[in-house]
Image (tube, rainbow, N blue to C red):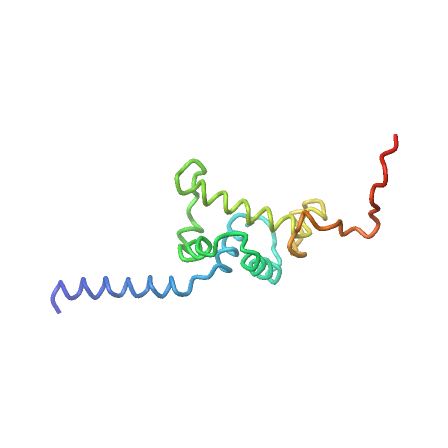
Length: 145
């Protein structure tokens, strides 16, 4: 085998691996990567993380294409600390912030006083327009002094 064939077969192999990785990338795994990267100091309930990822996709809160790209990047995304001031880091950081914020307010993290020593469980998609879930809450009829 001459050198040219060896180089072309190597390039073809790399292209095949990249194409297979692109085909296997999913938006759900992209959400999970964001949560694991940004909330690595918390213990997250695995079943809840997967339910949250499905809810993000169902609600179309973040572009599925962007989430697939994050999953496709894989270890490169996990191990790279992107500056918020860079052209790439700013938009990625904004999307990460949206995912992490939605997860935390949709979980029991703040209900239990933001305790980082306990497992954080996903309760359900937080909707600020829904009524309060507290059964003892009463509507305000009037303000009295």
